[in-house]
Image (cartoon, rainbow, N blue to C red; front, side, top):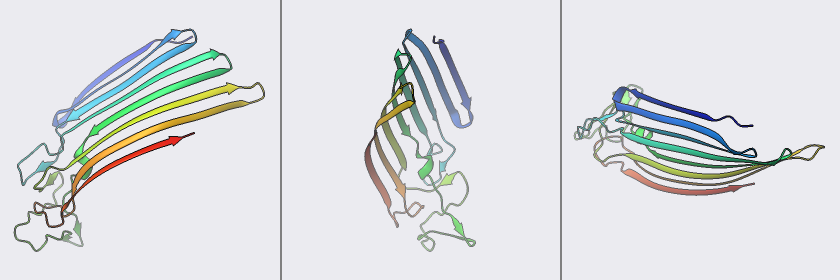
Length: 191
């Protein structure tokens, strides 16, 4: 027998950080059950671009969803289907300022008088908006069989990942070291 479950949580924090998540699970029949989990978060981020005056350079919005279907046709055989989707629009990982190495800013723009060199936490100086966006879709099937003399388990998964990110190589407001725009696409099948 399956228990019905429903939970919802919401939160609000510094820098307009908002979070909403929930989970639900219920039986469809005495041999099948479903569950759903979702999470949404967004906020302004805590990084300021002092070159453009944008105090929301780290603005983000992320969403995750997981669906599950459990089938138990007999007490010795079960199938668990899962689908997961994630969408991440969060530049936090590419918002870097100049590192200090042996007391000196480590950038190729060090001797350029037009370069704004920032080493303070939470601040950057970039002439273009930096970004990181990724999407993934995952399909899974787990099969369990109790043979009486042992158990057999099969895992099957298909996964698609796509990402597009734009980040700075010189870490200043000039395009001296350039910026890199990378698009990646990967698929994976496992059994």
